[in-house]
Image 1 (cartoon, one colour):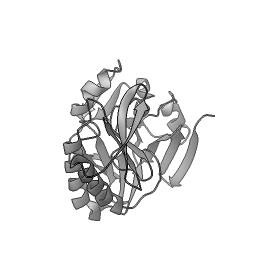
Image 2 (cartoon, helix red, strand yellow):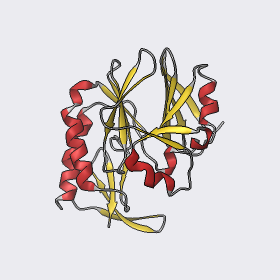
Image 3 (spheres, helix red, strand yellow):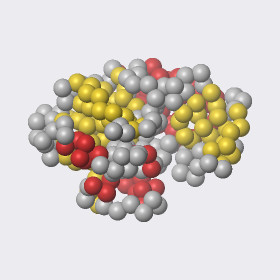
Image 4 (cartoon, one colour):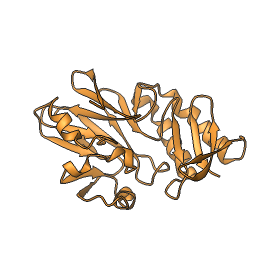
Length: 230
C-alpha cells in the first residue's frame, strides 16, 4: 500500500500520499473528501473502507497533487476561479461552484468555505466550525515549501488572503494543511504574512534553484520556504 490512513478523531481521517495529504470528514448524513490525492487514483474507494455514507468531493485547488482521483466523481465542489487551472490538465467532471462564506452541512457538521487566492486563483480553506479546525490547503504550511512561482500564482493576492485569514484566527484553534507539519497553530499565519511582505518588498535575499527546468528563487523564512519566480 503506497498510502497511509491515519484517524484523527471519531469522524475525521487524513490519508498521506507521497508528501501530500487529503482528508475524509463524516457527518450524520454524508461524507466529504477534501482533495483526492496525488499518486492514488482510488481515493473514493479508500474513503468507502472508512464510511458507508454517501461520499462527495471538494478540491481546495486544482494543482495536480490534489486532483489525482477526481475521475471517480461525476461532480465536485471547487471555486469557479480555479476551473481554468483544473481544465488545463484535461480533467472532466461537473464543477459545483463554492464561494467565500458558503457552508456545507454533512449532517450536524457544518463547514464554511474561505476563499484564499494567491497560491492559485481559486484556492480555498475549509473551516470545521464547531471543531474549530481549519483545513488550509497549500497557502498555510509550517516547515513546508509553498509554491508561489508560475503564471497562476499572485503574491499580492496571497498577502491579502493571509491578512484576511489572520483577522479570522480566533475562529479556529489549529490548522490541518495539505503538506508538512500537522496540526499547526494559528500564529503561523501572521508569521507567513510578515515573511511574504518582506519577500514582496525586496527585504530578503533568496537562493536560486531549478525546479523541473524552471529557474526559481527560494526564500527561507526559518519556518517555511516560499518558492517564487526568479
